[in-house]
Amino acid sequence: MSDTRSITVELGERSYPIVIGNGLLRGGFDLSAHLGGPDCLVVTNETVEPLYLEPLLADLSGKQVRAIALPDGEAYKTLETVEDILDTLVEGGANRDTTLVALGGGVVGDITGFAAACYMRGVDFIQVPTTLLAQVDSSVGGKTGVNHASGKNLIGAFHQPRAVLIDTDTLQTLPDRELRAGLAEVIKYGAIVDAEFFAWIEDNLDALIGRDAGALAVAIRRSCELKAAIVADDERESGRRAILNFGHTFGHAIERCQGYGEWLHGEAVAAGMVMAAKLSGEDAAAAERIRKLLERAGLPTRPPAIAASDLLAAMGMDKKVRKKQLRFVLLRELGNAFVSSDYDAARLGAVLGAAN
Image 1 (cartoon, rainbow, N blue to C red):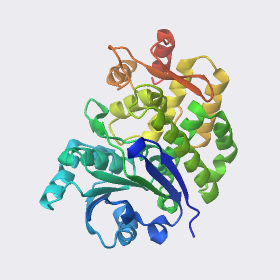
Image 2: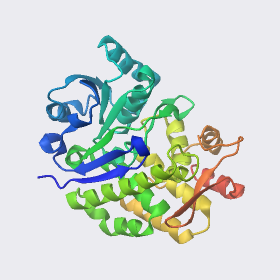
Image 3: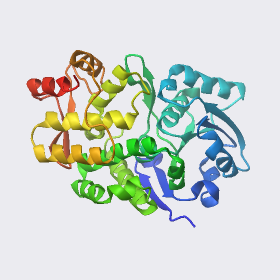
Image 4: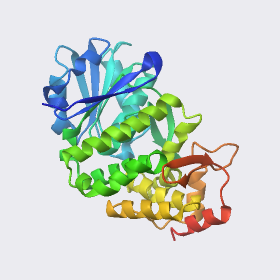
């Protein structure tokens, strides 16, 4: 039977559980209890559909359920895809008591959440993430949205789910590259807020890469605990929550310049974290530990060959920019991140120049 753990994202009347365990999609959890109405639309993609749609539907017995399978990949994280979901809702006569269920990775979750935020000015949705990156990061916190040609996640809304259901068994079918990309976000949490967790990852990385169920459960649970606490403190990223974007200013620029989907999000964030640690300049030992751990995880530690001017232009559309001033998530030391526009311009130039 599943060893189930639950973490609550504390947001008053909008609080919700993150339920973590194995076998949850095969009778280990009553998902229908979290639906506020009689019908729902399951949104998945063409890769996940044959693996997990049928067991999910069994968890929704007694409900009126429809499903839509989107094309798989970051390239489809667009307004056009959201429109497909909205058309399906309208054609099915969906009302405000309809619940959307996102079954898939971060792209599916972000798109589905944004469609839920838009439809009839907001309907409920549930996250059922099937990738490590989505389980530890994108499914929690209510950030939803799609990409624009000029930048990552430029179109979106804050819209919290009713629940997040994490079945760790889904990681057994995850491709190795996707698993490693998810580890980038796990490593991020240790780097920004929990040095002891970072050290635990260093000690247990081989088990994580080897898909040891116990190690993965610990990593997922601790990542979710850390993110839940930060989101409860700063839901709409007006302050501390911005530290969750460590490495993302550089990473999003890499994704934008490379073309969405060429590098996985976690791969771009991995290179971005090394760049951000170097830009911090205050703790060279911490920067080296981050680089070595990411390298051991099989992740990029250098950006691809992109002109510094192109990366800089792409970073100009970062959502942390204020008054046309770039702001970066930097490290004072391992486990102690902060956001600042006070950075060494010459060091930034050197960091960007390393891509060439």
